[in-house]
Length: 374
Image (cartoon, rainbow, N blue to C red; front, side):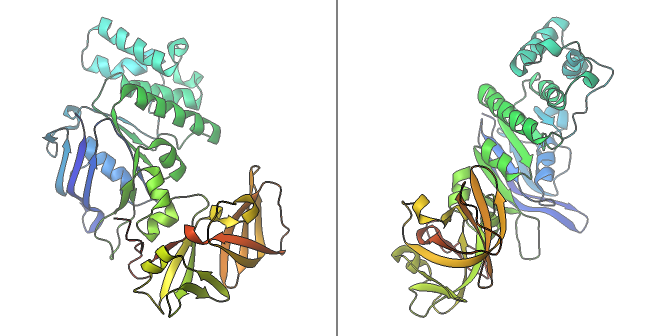
């Protein structure tokens, strides 16, 4: 059993706080993704697991062993970086085998392990090539091979696909996912790309940069769908999803039955009215994802639809759908339409908004008002 546990972990560089009060359990054989914007501490957390940075406060356990004072080479982890860091004068075979030779492993065992890793990664025909004769994706496979050949207890990936083009990133995402499924090794993967996070992770930890108002970087942990469908707070709601969730300032009317703002009026369902019972006559932040704003004829399963009108300011045709930005009073709302409905710039359009798909947030605490979200 090789789970990883953060218990009140903090990392500070002098007066600069990078991580604070991080509590997180990563399960045995789990693919955990750390995601967040630059400066949120995700790579630092990964380096703390590897032992490349010293913990300022708290404990990290790998399996049943606290590793705060354990040397990196004794932690049984393998790390893949953004840079391939291959030795240019060595062949693929020699690059993969290098770490095993440093450990003075018998040549017969090295050849066996290198052969197994090359077979898994499709590198067998390339074993005698030098890195300069490889594509970017092939070089990243060699870096993966150098890690998996050691059969570590934990894989650590620090934005390994950032140097690849879009097509190769998609291909390598699939390769890494299949690799983890096959080897069933506990894996921690760092990325700023929420698409990578959503497609790779069994669970995702969303981190935010430290600020005076925050006690910890960790905003929410959950499966991709949990984060998408039930964001605990405004940060997660805006960070997860492409295009991002629309956030509108609205006022709850005195009866608590509807939201109103600058000509936009949205009746509330019974469940949603219960959420705003303590906010009658007050401002709330309403979130609605772009796929829940569109044409009711394309979404007949929508409940509690409300008509909204606006002027088209941006049109983005992406093949299978059209993304438009409309100006509705003083709000700019992003909506998704069918592939063949392409409005003109400046056109006045009337769209439907799925009233039962809204999220409501407290403007002060930025927490979701739904009591069903822990």
